[in-house]
Length: 470
Image (cartoon, rainbow, N blue to C red):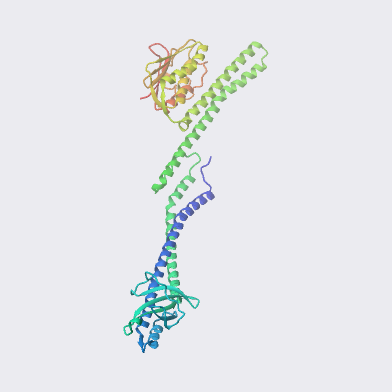
């Protein structure tokens, strides 16, 4: 198994992260800048219109000042008025029209449209002027309509309306200029922001590159935690989760390797013996000797099956912490069920199996399946290593459970080693896998319990093995 990512996969992963970060930042930023440009452009256009409307208002005022009544007719000093208009115009064409309040044409371009009556003017430079858009000679124009009082006229002719129209060329040029200036400045701002974002993203993902380098240079059997330098706070949960996964993966691979090594080492002897016994039985012509060899082969097969079951049980126990969650377990109920399950077998073997309960309930935190396995192994160990007629007692107290027997006991020199894997304290000739008490020890360790052995018991013989919780 290799933890080395391919260079292509690394480049694609980093590029994908970079693109995502840039898209998450730049696209919303472009939208915000676009909205800002649109609002700024609108404000600039409004300011330009106000400036041009003021110029248009001044043109209307100039015409009004050059109007006078002579001999009952309205007269305009065209030279002075036109001189001002042509000297101060901004590149657009100007038209004018003078009408009475009732709408009767008095002077100027009769076809020039009048500004519609509105409650409020677009721009108020004077209380009696209003502005609007219109069309004259098939082109858009801007209209300013001024209501003027003629001081030297009679009451009926005192009020007149002066309408001045301006074509939109100069305004459109100014608007285009503002538009391009706005877009240019916003574009430069976006480019600067993009460069800053790219630079920030490059620096931001640099710790990931350091982490990738550490991961790429790890050996296949190295599952130690990775601690890249200058790790940002936001990346710590990711690194911690990955390190936790590496730890679990290393533990699982170690369990698998240990199982394969143990199986290869421990099963080789019984399988070789079985093969030899069957070969001898096949070649032996004596029925009694052949029968003895077959019986020995059957016992060897039973021992191999028991060893295999114990190996699998040990592997299941080592995997248990990833497969099961602890909960409340009543040791009294557990001991009663396990004892009942072994009663028939004990009776068939000629042993006396009993249960002694010292408390009504004895609750601990753990996995019932594993505690069931541990207690079953203790009972099985007592039955397997004791002679026919062994008295076996399952005893439950406050936060402890033990299995006691009156068998041959365990010699003092063996008691410190009986929980080691494949350690056999049994006398020569008595088969055993050497895994039963190791499984009990592993389960006790996972449950935070202490396992202890007493032998002899009550000053005689026998063995008592207890699991206790503090």
